[in-house]
Length: 137
Image (cartoon, rainbow, N blue to C red; front, top):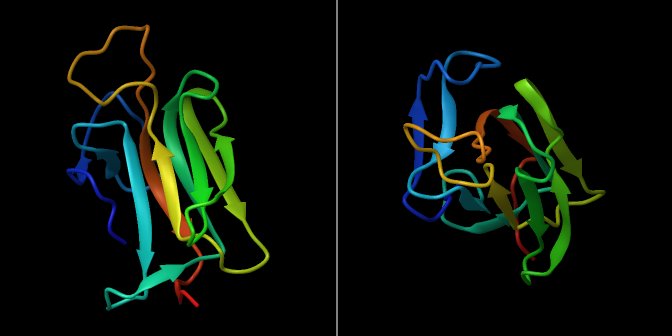
C-alpha cells in the first residue's frame, strides 16, 4: 500500500486521542497522501471496493477529506471527514465493486508541526480499513 511523498510517521502524541493502541498516522512534510493499492505481496497495481479511516481531532468542516479515483484517474467523489473536536471521526465509502485505485487523503489544512496556532486544523489518522485489493483489469 504505497503512499507516495515522504512517507508516514507513526507516533505517540499527547495532543491527540488514540482510538485503539496509541499509534497514530500522519504524513511527513505534508498534509496530503495519495494512497495507491497493490495486490498483497506484489507490486501489481490493484483496486478496492472502498476505504475508510478513524480520525482524531478534526475541528473544522472540510479540513480533512478523502477523494477516491479509479484506475484511469477519474474522480469517484470527494467526501469530508465529519467534525469531532478532540474526539473521533469516521469516514468510509464503499462502492458496489472494486473500482478504487487511489485515495487522496487530506489530513487537515496544514501539515503536522510541533506547535500550531488555532487558525490551523491538523488531524491524524488512527485505524483504517479497505476492501481486499484485486488486480486491475
